Image (tube, rainbow, N blue to C red; front, side, top):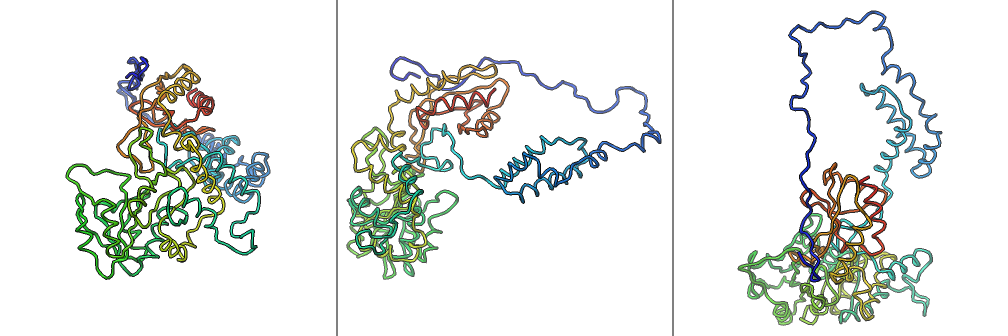
Length: 508
């Protein structure tokens, strides 16, 4: 494959066939090869009276209290506490006493085993990883990385008290929502806005405030399942609203909504099917038509956009994704979207639209239960401010990764391959790769990228990936065929040296 500059990239890794060492063609069966019958060995009395290795081990095992005072145990106790360390030592020694195969005691092995056990039981929390999967908004890796400005805002908020719920002018209590309401209005064009702690919570609070003890009408083709197995119908039912399904899986018309409206109808719900696509014999009403129906019948129209981009990504050659502003301009009364997807901020469920409905949601008890904490609010405020500046796509990491030119990606891949070098047991090469936006955005639309392909002569791709994942600096890649791919779209230029070092250690 050519990249437009005459340089050719292979679409996959390959090496010359190599002879693999296998097991003997006739493995030992455990039977004697001689034709003579086996004669059982008879132990002498002196042999039977001699203590076994297992008995000897039991007698020589140190006491729990003695091991708990060793320097390595003291170091572990500073991190995990003396009680858990002592319990782990006691459990390990008990297992050794019961193990029929145990014949010797190694304090070094015990120390390593206890450290691993404690780290597994008492996780030290999320650790930084290098995302070399090529998936920009990777749910399992924390979704959107924050811009430096948002990181600084969080750091400052951690260090000091803040006016989270205080009006500094009057000295009286205020709402924490005041910090972001004006920014949401400015960047989306909405009358008002509120932020809760995630988008599913925003859906729940919105329906509980507007449709409790009434009905919400939704198309069968839009009753999506989101991450973790949570389904939109379940969220709707939890709000106290009754779900009224209209249309069929593949075709829903505006007339279906109109026919289902009765005196119990409280909202018309439209969900952007961001994480899947239906093609072929399909039909769905345009948001403008649904908004017109809502106005005629005095029923608010709610659109759950999911990813919720704040800028038109098609201007950068990317597949079209509806923006929050365009949905409001099309007539939606409320638009709901995530903060940590295409917007590139912290986890948040943002609700923007008509002030009448926003005020009703803000005064509902669920909005208190699902409110954002001060650190997330600080990051959200700083992120929204970036949208008031020119060239925001260069300032927010998610947008920068999505819009970077293929030439930039190719240079980064070449640098990483060169930094890794050739090892005695593996080869590396730069190949063409497909990246994805992730986070439910732009499904089935791969983004051209480059990856460093690693192929080991001694290890399987699964074993290589495990070593990369469990090193001191975890590197998360992906497997294709028998190779590990490190897609550099989701790496920064200043990650190259550290990733190369991690690869060299893992494959040494």
